[in-house]
Length: 273
Image (cartoon, rainbow, N blue to C red; front, side, top):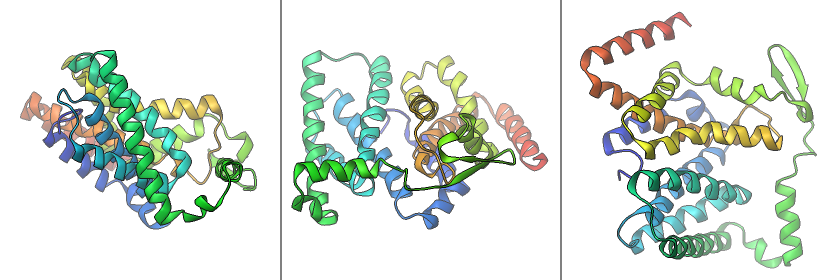
């Protein structure tokens, strides 16, 4: 759909994501981070369709949202909170471009999303987390808090040749790790997409563009634990690639010469590095 990007921009984003080494590497390192990131972007898409489409939401869209919410909760239950944030950001930018809806419509559709999402999580939990139905509400709460507690892990991170304890990780660690592990081409396209979206008045795509730095700012503000690289923030990469995919297509539409010049500069920077 074209809620945020058109088809060709989505294809470009998928291609850039598929050839991102960290995305491929973590597909084999950890079994839940890539499924979680995939479910988050898919649930965000279906949620945006439910909330932002001018026509009333179709049952297939609600079903898709329920399925991907269930998959998201199965991969990382506490991570469902991230869906609310990403969905809200995307929706605000989308409505800013498409036009605001009456408040009653927004409330009704939000309740639909909440109901479909909770139903999906409940059904998936029966299949993958059946023990939750054997716990009391208090025991379930303790399990959720346990998932949020990383204190039993005693580790260090490496930044600029110096080791830091998990409780004293510098604020620049996550940003530095993300910048040095991303290929230069999608990273350059991502940064190029910001002025291009503003000039072309593509307000909706700005929602996806601002999400990666927004999540990093949340981590900085809350001092959330960061360790073993940025695997717990790998879900930012698909949103980054959406911006990069839009940037690639937008540069191509400017003209062949501009695209060739950009390609030459990007290739030089890649091999020079």
